[in-house]
Amino acid sequence: MSVQPFRFKLKKVSAAEQRVLSALFDFLPKTGMRDKFGSSVREALSKHLGVEADYFLESVVQGDFSGFLEKMPDPAVLVVLGMAPREGKVVLEIDDHLAALLIEKLLGGTAETPPAPKPLSDTEQGVLQYLILQVLAHIYRICGNDARLHFRFERFVFTPKGLKGQVPDDEAVSAFTVKMTVGKHSGFVRLYMPSPLVEQQYLNVPMKGETRDGERAFILERLGEFAHLTVPLWADAGFTTVSATELNNLEEGDVVLFDSTELMLTNTGPAGRVVLRTGEGRHGGFVSEVTVVPKKIHCKIVGVKKGEDIA
Image 1 (tube, rainbow, N blue to C red):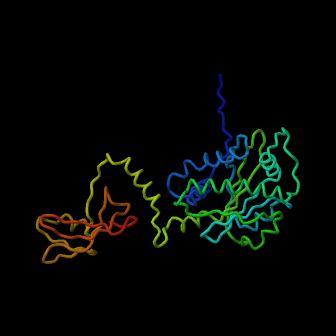
Image 2 (cartoon, rainbow, N blue to C red):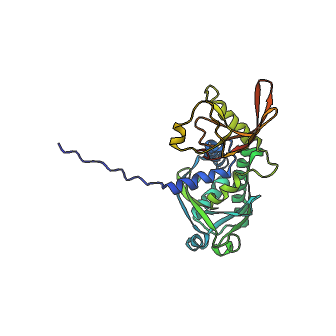
Image 3 (spheres, rainbow, N blue to C red):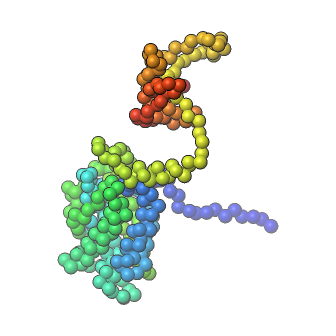
């Protein structure tokens, strides 16, 4: 009996798309939001629409905003969101069939056939805006005081030309295409975000005076899960370079001078700074100030040393 190999034809997500998607989550506080964000948004949508709602990410594409602008339908249902305190804008493109369905459900409609899309009246715009504001409010509540950005509804735009000036044409953006199901029907939402890989660099650096207590508490809680582990801790006082021959000729009592060190010997003992490291020390350490007390040396942590910088 011959055996025929079965080849899976699964859509592949590139490493670049994974990096962008990972960076996108840095728009949220690092307090475990990545794990519960999706379920929280689904819960908010289902609550207000009165039927089960779900969504799935289908694709991630990067490019200049002008390229995406040319491909947008005209007319379209577009939403401009601010992202204070950053100056960038987020553009939300809602499939017009999906927009009509959302409004139908919010108004209590029970028809099995989704309504035909049409230009939105002022009342319908208000209804759709209500849903968007409720989802944004839900996101803000679960982020609490740890929110890194505040997404705010600014306006509806119903033609791609209306976005001129809102987002620079040459700005690098990432387009996230999301399939959304409402009850038995589905449509798409496309989210145009300022390049998460760029914004990530800003969002991960605390501003002066910013404490991020929630993130600190979350990290300490996660670290507490490893409290039962023990690791060697040692102090890096400096470094020097020796050849194999010199190393072979070293004898007890020999003095080796550091090529680089922030430590010095005083009348009361060593003083200055060392770097506390764990394991092999190749992933940075803690910069510490040295003070000497009887029979002990204290190291007070004053900073962080990042990267691999030991020989």
